Length: 172
Image (tube, rainbow, N blue to C red; front, side, top):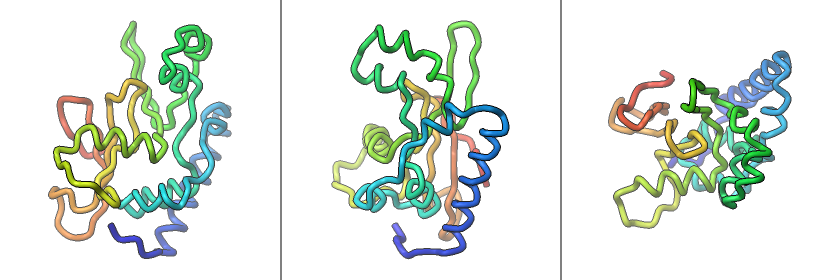
């Protein structure tokens, strides 16, 4: 991907983070703000081929939710104790009866791993021009960002949401 610095894009992403955190604070959603991880390491940022997403990761390397960590360890007691954090996904979701979707901002390492799961190429990659950067706690309901995904012509960054059965534009 294009790793050149773009000051305008950087400022737009920095302003977006400022506005997101202000809106969350205004709604007393401090737990979501507190779940945001520090900036991604430079070696992780080089893996993100989508410039706008790379800049977002340069400010926050996804979210750290207690439920996700407990689930990774398969610690049922900790999952039960931290189940409230399953609803702290930055990108929101829905809950009805036993159906829960709350889409969190994945750290770069998790986004690369999730994208690699679906990658049909066996070739090693230096960076990912398409990256699944957000998902539900179980990996479903993915958001994907990419450059030149074949849906548009030119050097255009696009974002799509995937509920497992269809791909739909989530942002222009």
